[in-house]
Amino acid sequence: MPMFVDTSPPGQCIFCRLVAGEIPAARVFEDELTVAFMDIGQVNPGHVLVATKRHAATLFDITPQEAAAVAQTVQRVAFAVRDTFDPPGLTLLQANGREGDQTVFHFHMHVVPRHGDDGIALSWPRKDPPGDILQGYAARLRDAIAGG
Image 1 (spheres, rainbow, N blue to C red):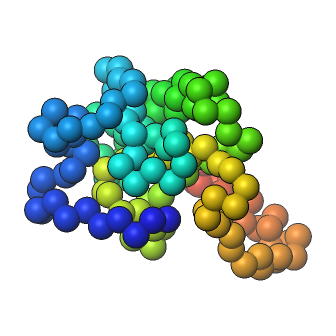
Image 2 (cartoon, helix red, strand yellow):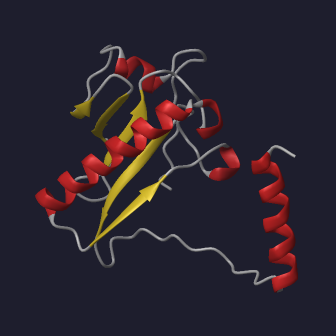
């Protein structure tokens, strides 16, 4: 992730200010629940951010309706990026919390057109746990999803 630091004063979310029209943005699309705009730190031409209009810091703070609306806007923007810039690849990225590399604490997703040798690296060390461990993780998650 780029090392952008939101320097907005506490209680003055930079994306909330953008949604309210208090700061300029190169808007791409908006509807009742979302806004899509060009990332000022363009990694490649067509790099767009899709954010909820309502302030919500992370994925855990948005409603199911906002999640669906963001996904639909992301797909709409992704098709436009493909048709306009013809990148050979595309990365969707969404980060939560400092440890997740979130730098602006307002829910958003990156739509990033990708090209070979564009300087973006998405890698992590594989841990390869045994199958029985994976089955245990899956069972725990199934229980959580079922409400148990």
